[in-house]
Length: 284
Ligand code: AMP
Image (spheres, helix red, strand yellow):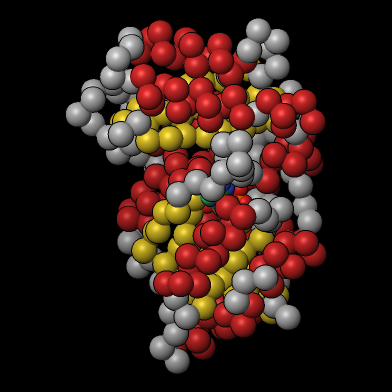
């Protein structure tokens, strides 16, 4: 049976006592509704540490729509079963409630200097989202004080935000990135996929297919044409999806770039009715 902690003080003392015995701790923050993408993070944490702490907390301050927060899938018992399928002697779960993480309420959160990384793409389209992410990750880091923390490339901009705050706050935590895990048809695994209608799910392969087509033709076609085609490929003549943005940026700065000598990455956000899907791939 997995051990589950609900209090910050409990997980803090569990982790400190193990650290004082010389054990290393890898931390995997999640919002639950776990899938094999999350399990890959936990497996990597277990490979690289003596213990893995997986947090399951749906963080209200990173949602910029009440509806999205209410719709977010929650399946705690099933999440525990999935984690138990790993090496459960070496995993513990931190599952606080909102009051535990925000004892003073949620009004005064989010005053981090995010160095403009929050001004583009996800940041531009979801005001306040990354302040909420920075707030909760900082709080969770303080509760666990891990040696290493694991984040998915699926949320590449989030990864950049976490690296930035870890550095600027001088936190002694190694941030480790894990490649995106995909469904057989290429769709990036996401807790939100469970919210897709049958029709949207059946056609959602369009997103990754369009992205890989941009990558394949990057050297031989005009970029504006590639992007226009990608939008058409995803939305389709049926307009089943709506592309919110599709952008090529330098992966170090996240600023728009088409310089082939830079490490370029393609990012997109796509609406499938009320469900918003994001994805990104390297173009090199
Ligand atoms: P979430 O529960 O969506 O907040 O995600 C928790 C962590 O899992 C984040 O670091 C995500 O980037 C990561 N993650 C989510 N989906 C995937 C995926 N398909 N592949 C790899 N990592 C993922």
